[in-house]
Length: 187
View (cartoon, rainbow, N blue to C red):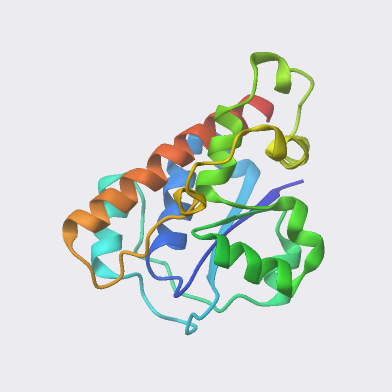
């Protein structure tokens, strides 16, 4: 059975498609075991990826050509096994649509931070992506939060400088490298 991973941002033209494309690349052959999608809380259906964000996707090995934005719906949120959001406000929007998603919705940086804060033995008995999500959800309160809660957010680079796009892409890439390593380890 495929695991559905959903990335969520605002317009679904910068951060969430970048995240989906980078995770696909970081998972390598293991990506075929997952359905990796994206959506936006205020997205217009059918928009292409922002040019600057698409450049960053290509730089990181992604393939942005086929991306078309879509609006986040309850059905989309409900169908995901893991929801990775750009900001805490996006996570809140997902949980508002489908409250049961609370245990499987995280910001991208939060999920990576919790994984990075685990002890070596914390995942030895985890043998599936679904069990990984469940374990991270259970342990998220045991890993110290960032001093500034906004540190779990990824800034919106839309209509901002190239350096902002590079920084945002690098933040997403770093977090997703950690997440991809964990997903491969339990698959």
